Length: 83
Image 1: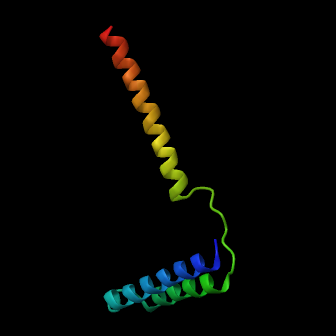
Image 2: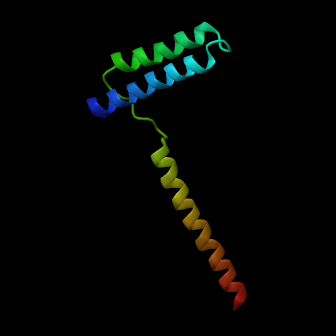
Image 3: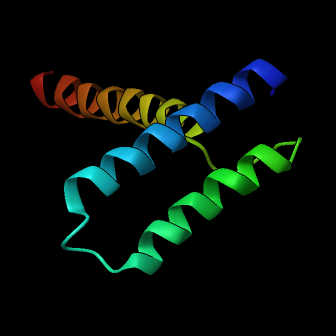
């Protein structure tokens, strides 16, 4: 991840924390807001990203592959029955 991408992701975390605070200030305990700001602070201070074993990109790729396999198997089964 580049510095710009990390900055944008932290900005999104800050916006989320601000929105959650504005919408649920009376409903959530104060420690929740401290935890959200702690996540944003850690994201700003840690200048590297840890690659995850599973991410949304790899999950969608796997899903597409598995759907293709499933479609092939179904079409094979249906094709054999028609003959």
